[in-house]
Image (tube, rainbow, N blue to C red; front, side, top):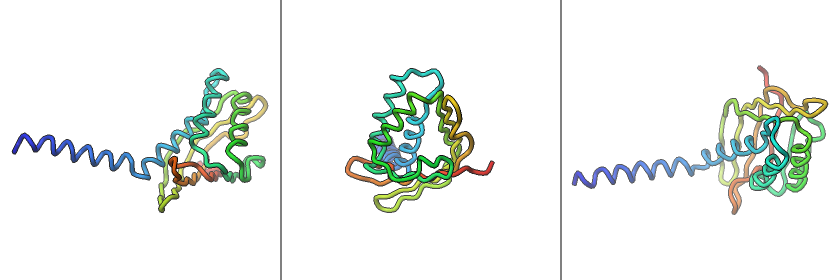
Length: 162
């Protein structure tokens, strides 16, 4: 009987971990972190390594994504995934560096096949002549679960108070 106790305890722990790991909240947290890592490009990195992010971005975006921001007027609206990939490719060529660092997650809400992640980011986008983003931002990411997993369908951000 004692010999069965250890494997049973291990099986229960593994099942609990799997349940937690694959819960929608944890998946959305990982997808959000993956998005921010994809958008981050360190100064001095080569174009080819930056361009590899386009493939990662494709796996994270819905066919259409709505962007809402008071800080970058040209970034407002609904865009097709291909348009956002082209814009990201342009950013890869132009940016000296970009950094999107997650400061904290305020909430993760899941309802059926949709989810929302509210968080605060430290963001820097440094272009040759100006910085369209530099500071702390309150961000809300809206995700939708499809046949191929969770994809970003809307992002809203505004400058946050320090």
